[in-house]
Amino acid sequence: MQQYQQCIRCVMDTSDPEITFDPQGVCNHCRKFEEETRLGWFPNEIGAKKWAATCEQIRLSGKDQEYDCILGLSGGVDSSYMALKVRDWGLRPLVVHVDAGWNSELAVANIEKIVKHCNFDLHTHVVDWEEMRDLQLAYLKAGVANQDVPQDHVFFASLYHFATSNNIRYILSGGNLATEGIFPEAWHGSAMDAINLRAIHAKYGERKLETYSTIGFFDYYFWYPLIKKMRTVRPLNFMPYDKQLAIRELEQIGWRAYPRKHGESLFTKLFQNYYLPTKFGYDKRKPHFASLIVSGQMTRDEALAKLQEPLYDPEELETDIEYFCKKLRITREQFDSYLTAPSHHHTDFPTWEARHKLLKKVQRLIQRAIGREVKVYS
Image (cartoon, rainbow, N blue to C red; front, top):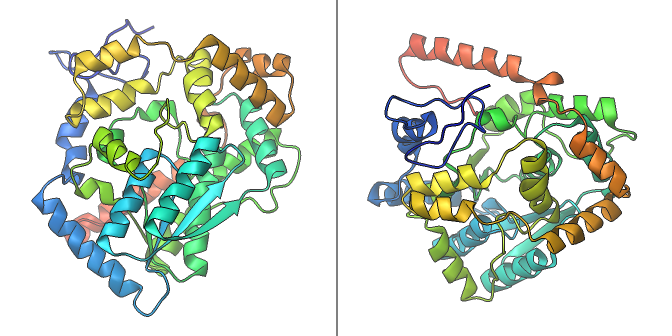
């Protein structure tokens, strides 16, 4: 077993089984951010110019159409703040919210505030609850770490399908490097891996997924980006994005902050703050704080102090577990058994990783042949 060690620059530690440290004690995540990730982050005039050019492309692509882009809105800080910026940029988004059955009341209220303030059209896609419930139970029975895949996959799949059906080429995502630039790959697999999702459901599910939206490997890597010419863009990577300043701006229109990260989803709240730390020893605050440290929004001392705070108030935890069990129609004993059952890695089930490696190999061969970069979505 690896001896415990924590990075001297951020707060990532050996709870990531693949972490490495240089002789000075700086982890591979910090080095990767500085050497690779930062190259895609433009919180400066260069970013402003790049984004202005992209905005013009979006406007041209939607000329003579009702909408020029799709904006996914969860009610969280990132997507909500981006909605305000989209309004400032004069884009014409169709706002899409995917309701997987776990919205908090505050999330619903925040979405209403944003849409009303920006005067955007909102389309809400409600996922069939019985299918979602069956898929989430299958993931619990599988004992894998990435329990959020059923929600994440249907969210992005719905955006892609809706963009195609409305002839919209651009999807705007609130994902960003300023607050999400560090994340240990060993903790999870790709949320877009439909092969893995279907394999887990085939083994542990009890009903067909007749309406649940998925995206296959060919669609994700070829059909949408190459044939349909669709692009997912992340505007927050082209501006100085400070989360606390964003919250203050949002609060001016009546949006209310969540007590916890991802508090917009009751499932994600329990999953990240209880299931993952209890079953796997993964505290998602660490990569989140590490991201804020390397992007200059938090000091290491501040992060260490925050990590000393409890993940859950005991009474609140019991209330949330009770609601979780009632919603999924399981007993507390069943819930506890999922936590104590043997864990599995997502690669214990079929994945599309072999196909992805082959695709990356072909990419490198083409790059060598033509002498320039060829984009393959990761």
